[in-house]
Image (cartoon, rainbow, N blue to C red; front, side, top):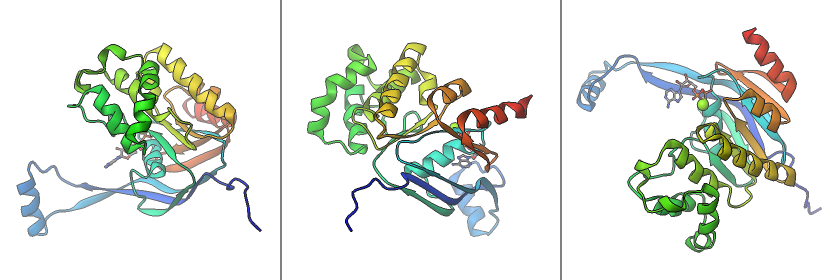
Length: 251
Ligand SMILES: Nc1ncnc2c1ncn2[C@@H]1O[C@H](COP(=O)(O)OP(=O)(O)O)[C@@H](O)[C@H]1O
Ligand SMILES: [Mg+2]
């Protein structure tokens, strides 16, 4: 029987672990590195940033990731976005992703804002014609019309975030990943981004994975939260319950 129903899950994280190898001593040059390597004097210590994480997200679900700094939230989002490959486990994603992960990822600081819109757009899979047709809309949303021919290196991080958000959300993605991107802009732009995210959420078609400094924002936007603490999955459930438990940890 042909099936036209939506897939059951948009994102499936199955027993994912992430190990970073870190040189156990500070080396000052590549030469020093190769000499140590040749002499078999180079030792690595393993650091487990994620330990056996599993969770599934249904299409249209809006999930917040919470956890103290360095707990592995960004690492988890990068694995889902395909920027990093998990050391163990699998991650299945169904649909196209608009990743707002790290400021500046997919941008070249030497190029102008206008050139960066085309560069970043191409990385997101947009054609030149498509961007031509949507350039005004992008520039208007980012509110940076007067700065389009300025190299990105002269932009503040808030201005880069505006452009990144404007490009990534110009079409409705299947999966939107937002990693603290909104916290660098000013409060008015944050509100504007939040309205666009809400618009996606209300359409019911967009799956959202959301990380914010602000627990209030997570509670306002998300239905569910996944709490990752020092690489361990602590809790997964309704957003208010998880945020309550997370807050109690500090009480
Ligand atoms: N490329 C990397 N190499 C080594 N360690 C890393 C790398 N990326 C992240 N880490 C470490 O992994 C841990 C989790 O980082 P991260 O995912 O950025 O946490 P969070 O986003 O929750 O603050 C931190 O201890 C961080 O220092
Ligand atoms: Mg992070």
